[in-house]
Image 1 (cartoon, rainbow over the protein chains, first blue to last red):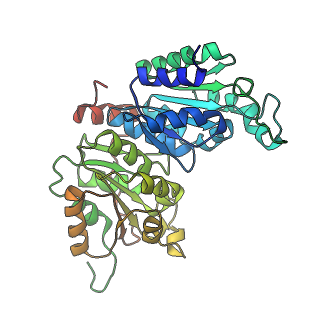
Image 2 (image 1 turned 135 degrees about the horizontal axis):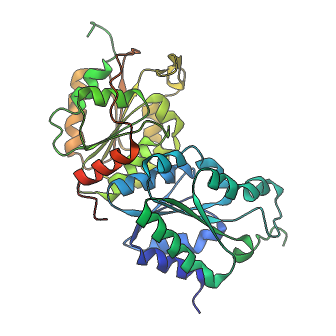
Length: 170
Length: 196
């Protein structure tokens, strides 16, 4: 079986995603690499996650589909910018690599990690969660479908248990 | 214009930027630059931000990357640009050849009582843009320089950044459509992006 990260990338390709904004996270490292290597995808590194919400809106005004990659702590940076997606009904697909939950070493990751789902839902973002590798691609595809068929904002949370807890002590 | 006043009238500056606009696409930031664009005249190819402060430059980048065959102009204010200053770093890395940014700089937060912004103090936006890797940077305080820049908006094969010094005035508000869904839909229809 293919790696679940490669399957998510295949789902993005199948949905004709053309721009991918990201703030790096170890959990997204493989996906970021695949996006940079693909000639059909423009991978855009961001200085802060909220830039990606505006990037996605601009791309959609021009007729291109996007995905936005970030870590759970980055969701907090997006809150006001999500008003752009809601007020204009821009489609949005955010893939969130979770921190601050399963076997987290760093307590500073916990406040956003444990509350960002609620924060997203308060902003009317539809939230899906992936715990097991075999669910990853189909969940991303489902989010892409509902976002781009319905002009809705969605987020897919990739559980820390799925990604693997970050190792701090060698 | 008053003699020796090294700043432009904001409405006249917007009118100059949009003269003979051809198929130029326009994004404006919250709030006064949106009123300036509406005062010049509504157009389906204008996307006015009424909120999401800090979004204008990044929205322009997404649009420029999606439509490399079109010219994109973002006009926003100093306060709106300062809120998304990191966007200049992101744009400096991408440098699309069809994107121009013009920041109307009066050193004030005009919508909230004309409080001083950082550009009234130590911050120089052209210096920031240049340091972010944007190569064609202009500091504009007169009509001739603005005309030159407007020509480049239609022809340069480079990302452009202009700081346009404007007077701290509060002209009568001219409010465009504020329904975001309608603004989005009519813009996409006008440029043939609907089928995507």
